[in-house]
Amino acid sequence: MPRNSLKHHLYVIIFGTHTRAGRIFDIALIIAIISSLVVLVLESIPSIGPKWASVLRYFEYSFTLLFTLEYILRLYCSPKPKAYAKSFYGVVDLLAILPTYLAFFFPSASFMGVIRLLRVMRIFRILKLVRYLQDSNILLRSLLMARRKIFIFFSTVAILVTIFGALIYVIEGPEHGFTSIPQSIYWAIVTITTVGYGDLVPKTPFGQAIASMTMLLGYSILAVPTGIITAELNQEMNSHRQLVKCPNCSKSGHEADATFCKHCGSELADPDQRVVPVDETQNAP
Image (cartoon, rainbow, N blue to C red):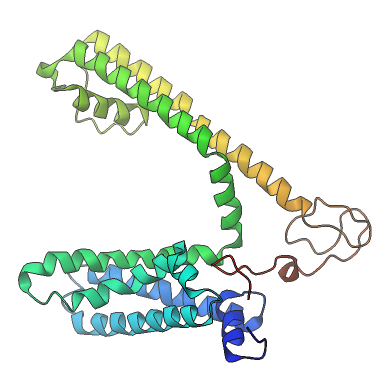
């Protein structure tokens, strides 16, 4: 891609955030996404939606055209358009504009429920905000690193709620509302997560003892996933600090937004120049 071409300039503006034009484009797009979500919320309010239907529809069509133009420009200036279209954000961009166009193909009143469901899919636009949060990548990598531990934790919780559900079913029985083991497992899940809807309540002393154990266990295990994610997040942030090195003393361990070295006081590189913008297709031009 020639660096003086229109395609390259569009690529720098749309996919990059290291230039002033790129930051302005990102801010404008974030405002458009949030505004479109506000329109979606207003459409769902009975006292506002029908009264301002024409105005809200006008805004919706305007936002759809704007996001369609953005999607086309991304395909045009991307080094590998097919790779972008198949990527996560490419699919999100497509889902953000499809519902409005699909609604034109279902004019019959019998399909109004389907159209309403498709229009709710516009909430996918909010997923596009993730790409503009640099710290979200650190959080995402932390979750990916902890996925096995989290899976083991949820498997353990699933076994526990199954055991407590089966016990409460045997102890309480259908006469107290525990009509089946799945219904009892639902009670165990609600209880162990400390939600406690109160629609199912043990009546026997033994059942109440099991419920007390379940509640205490629920408070005990709440800290487990928090500790797992916190440990992985701390490790990821420490790894990220190692990437910021001082050009004078070559020591690392600085914060991502640090301006001066904490060891020798020398000026560090501009934070915007430390991270090379990555194309969403994972391919540079």
